[in-house]
Structures are given as structure tokens and as C-alpha cells.
Image (tube, rainbow, N blue to C red):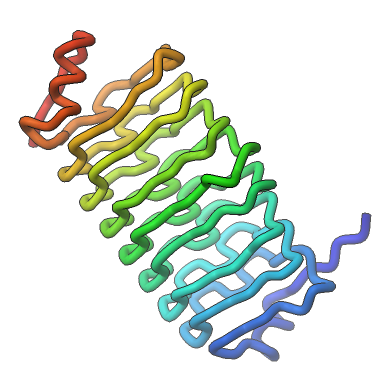
Length: 217
């Protein structure tokens, strides 16, 4: 298979507020759009791989469409402070560490069609302070360290059957988190995973029922 890489040099020549990447490109190069302040909407029709920091710091970006992406690199969308939602395609297999961290206005992350992504990695959605709605992939087995750290608006999380591991500080300082369903398949919950849970919530009752220690900020 031949991969056609869209480089930073080519991006800078053609970028617009509404930017449609030509369908013959299949890879968005590392840092290709890093710190671009012009693009508001991007359509990546045939991009299969978004490399490390591909769209890092695109502070004007509000909408991104990546229907055929299978791999999102480390910090690929980090610091896209105006991005409002992320709809993940069914064939996405891998998300890099910190991929959507500090997307301060991201309110929705939707994996409902995805059946291949098995890990939500370290700091993937850390400090997404407006994130309220979260549907995780049906086959996810691991939630990494600080994956949802300081998601201040997150109220409810349904974890899928088959989840095995919840990492250190995974939901640390999610101050509005009131309900979480933890399936029986989970065998490890690391320290501080739910530190800062809202006092008096249904989650507190769950912890009491199963002998989990809760701490509050």
C-alpha cells in the first residue's frame, strides 16, 4: 500500500478556514498544522493516520471530521481550545497519549460506532473541562492514568462490559461525577482513580456497597 503524506509545507500553502484535505492524502504528518490559528473546520476524508501533534494548538478549530482514521497520534488535537465534539470512526484502533488533552470546550466524545479501540491512554481527555457526554468504545479494556483528569463537567460514565483496568487518577478531580457503572470484569482500580467524587452521589453508594474507599476534595 502507498501512503501519501500531507506535510507541514504543503498545508501552509493550502490551508483555509474551511479546510478539506484532498482525498489522495492518507497521512497527516507530525506537526503538520501545529499552532495554526486560521482553520476552523477540517475534513480529512481519507486520512488514516494523524501523527503526533498533527493539529496541536489549532485554537480556532471547532469541527474536525476524520471518518477513516485508524490511528490518532500523541497530542494530535491537544490544546484545540475551541473544539466542541469528537466523533470517533468505527475502525479507529489507537489513540495516543494526551490526544485531546486541554480541549477546554470539548463537550462530547462519542465512540458508539467503534468496536476496535481497546485502550483510552494516559491523559487522553485530561482537562476537557466542558466534557459532559461520554460513550466509550464497546471493546475498551483499559483506561489509562489521568485519562479524564479534571473533566470538571463530567456527570455520568457508563463503562463497558469487558473493561479490566482503571488507571491511577483516571477520573481524578471530576468534581461533578455523580454516577459511574463499573462492570464485574474490572479486576484493577488504581489509587486516586475517583478521588474528588461528588459527596452524596450514587457513585458514593456504589463504593460503600463494594467496599471501595472514597476520598473527597
